[in-house]
Length: 108
Length: 121
Image (tube, rainbow over all chains, first blue to last red):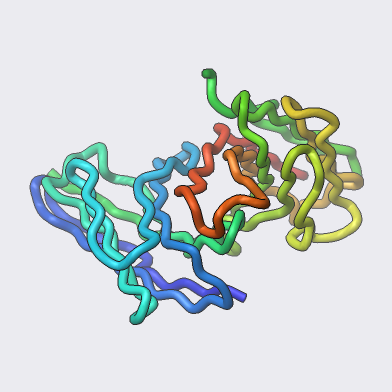
């Protein structure tokens, strides 16, 4: 089976940097995905790491260490619109197993 | 493309009634997923179809739940009879995935519909 751990809540001010950590245990691992979900909305894809290292997409970056079963999502230059829930998800072939999500609140 | 389309957006029904949720995946995608999201259990995979064939239904909670995909552009999730504990947001997602492709190849991005918020009274 799969288990993922990520913090439940993070609060930061506009312009700050937030790092959301994700540790996982899994019986099979292809990669680690990150999804964003605004309140009342649908999850949307942010990033995917199959190999160790950092992937950068604009203000967001994602990191993976397969040997440590650990990854993180880095949100830079926080904006109010970044207030949302962020989910890490372990990919095992076709299947995504989602963490419980981290609610990020951005304050002015 | 309009993205994944789900209907209805909201459904309120009484315990014991039959509920049917509908999903139109993105054209060209061959994989379709039904998820359920609740505060207590988070986002759970219910069933996965590849090329219209159910591949993994291990997440379907019980016999009251059934899902069909009669063609590449339509899927339904049915609950009969519905119970209050079925109240949740149900998401449909689609992606392109090859069962015979290079293991781990591609990002396997899943595109989610807007969801159906189901309330069973």
